[in-house]
Length: 68
Figure (cartoon, rainbow, N blue to C red):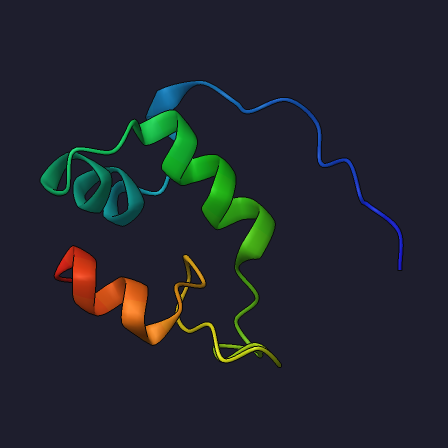
């Protein structure tokens, strides 16, 4: 398994608005949220082999601690 370079992040107006809204709601830099979402998200794999869930691939305990 290699690392796939997807190119530089595009301009902010092209970011997924749901990701940006969630980032701002929880005090996360939208650039960071978009980067993590882009790297981790796979629509056919919402639960990783380690148990991380959702588009940001948070572990259940971490999600509870963060209130998400």
